[in-house]
Length: 179
Image (tube, rainbow, N blue to C red; front, side, top):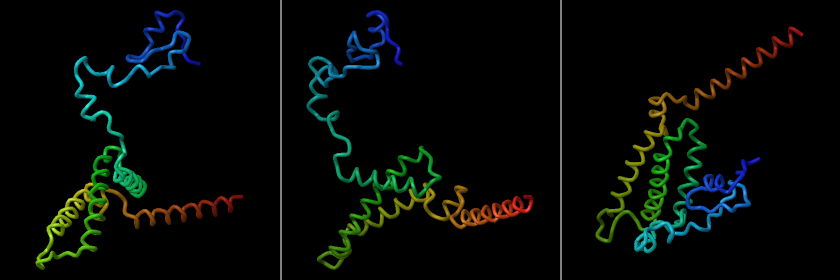
C-alpha cells in the first residue's frame, strides 16, 4: 500500500515538480496534463516550440525499426556482449543496413558507370565494409577477435558440452551402481 500523507502540507511536499497531485489522491497518482511544451519554456522563447527538436517522434524512420530488429538479433547471437557494447552494436547495425542498400544498388545498376569507369558507390561500399570490419573486430564477431577477447569458440563450447554430457553419464552410472 502506498504512503498517504495525512495533511495537505505533506501532500504538497510529496508532489513531483511540474505535476499536480489531487488532494484526495495518493501521492503516486500524478496528473501530468499540466506539463506542456509551452509551460516548460521560458516566457517569450518560442524557439523550442517551432524548431521541432523536442517534438520529433522516436522510431519514425523505417530504418530505426530495422536497426532495432537487427540489434536484437546481434544481442541474441553474441551472448558475450555487455551493455556497454550497445553503441557499437547499433553502429554496426546501421552500417549493415547501409551496406546492404549500397550492395543492392550496385547489383541492380551495375558497378561501372556509363563511361566504363567504376562508380563512386563502389568506393563507398568498400569503405563501409572496411569500417564495419573494424566494428566486427571490436565486438568479437570474427574468430581472431574472439580469441583475442578470450571468448570461447563454438568448437570449444561444443567440446565442453560433450565433456559435461560424458561426466553426467558417468555420475549417473555410478549412482545406479550404488543403488
